Length: 440
Image 1 (cartoon, rainbow, N blue to C red):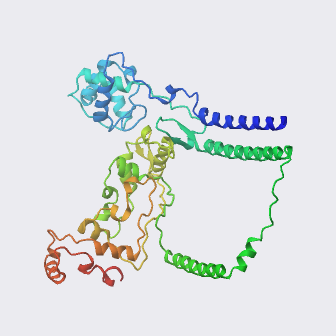
Image 2 (image 1 turned 180 degrees about the vertical axis):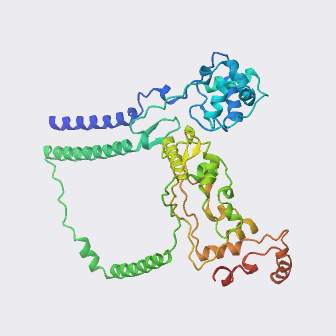
Image 3 (image 1 turned 45 degrees about the horizontal axis):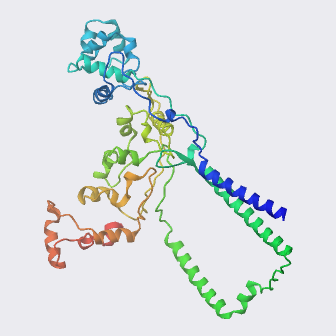
């Protein structure tokens, strides 16, 4: 009996250990909260208002300046220590006048930055400039210390997380403990039965399952029919999906997040895919279109980072763009050395199918999401619709043609409205089911 008691005690210890792991284990235990919180901004010795300075900086200065990195103009962090305050007042209010007066510091800055003239801001008072300087003089915050296992963290409401790998390890440990507990309980019961001279019932020999199945003719017939039907179903399904790439999401040479651009920043689709308005094809945006914004945006905000894509990842993709177009971010000029970007095509219709983007986008006024799905929510672009013939035909049957202010459809719409006895005509009723409309 001593051995039985010892085994039961071991089971209790194992169970208590599992409860302890679930209750107290936290991969971010001991993490300093200050390391993950934002750095508290301190006001400059001039007494400037940091909050007001940030607002002024973003509205007036951010187009040409960054705080900690060169852009069109110099990085502004440390500028209050490098120049006299009175000189800064004069420079910001009217830089051209200082250059014309022969001020050596003004001329040096003008020459260093490719003789690019700085906008004048005579509307700013000295207090306003003090506020801006208070904001730009805040030291750059160190990135938060990495936490082991945080790469695959599952976010919780409290902002902390638990590693997926650690969670799986805990679950595996729990299953192992349950197996040990069941083994110990079974062993204990057998020992208890032996100690009390209790005879355990002997298991009866069972007929092999395959033999029982073969001897049942009805079950064999039903199984054969089901196998034939299932085989036909899967063969038909396989051939019907040939050439259908719904859900296709290739990895692109430069990661482009539609979620950030079309979603968070609300960039209109046709700003990048401008040819969709006037051409059969939507077109691949030129990298010059990207540089319209990314000439000034060399890094993303911390808030953009997710559990899957860090800030460093996004910043690295911007550097790939710079390399492709030959942009030197430090010198703020193009080097002339470019590299082609081999984008992977996602949506691809067969050659015998004709589709015109401008006819649907400009004439019909169909939103891009109608065919391409919720693009503004896609981190990685994928093919949302099947793009099959049946899918297109159903759309033509369900979509009414917009004839307002369209003289082309004015006459034919009246005649067809009488023919079908309706006020609104679908694309199908206007000839959208004719073979020659899409096949040529």
